[in-house]
Length: 81
Image 1 (cartoon, rainbow, N blue to C red):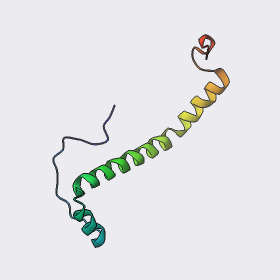
Image 2: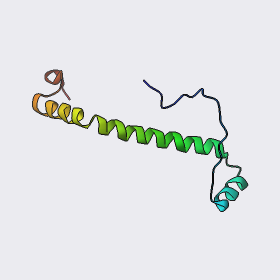
Image 3: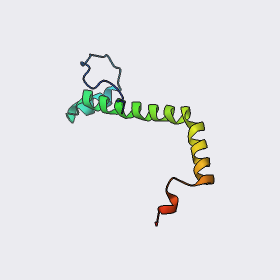
């Protein structure tokens, strides 16, 4: 299975602009900004890549579902559930 990104890549500093009150309250609660942003970006990346994969494979998925609807699945005759 292919990973979303290189987990072993080195960290790199980035400049961000954030709502000042959001930043202040996050720091007051000792929220790790780097870890929080990495988690949010990882989730967004997974969501975006999933949508792209579904769009790219839409026709194949539809064809497969139509085939199963018409022909049944492999081994259906042996299932007892």
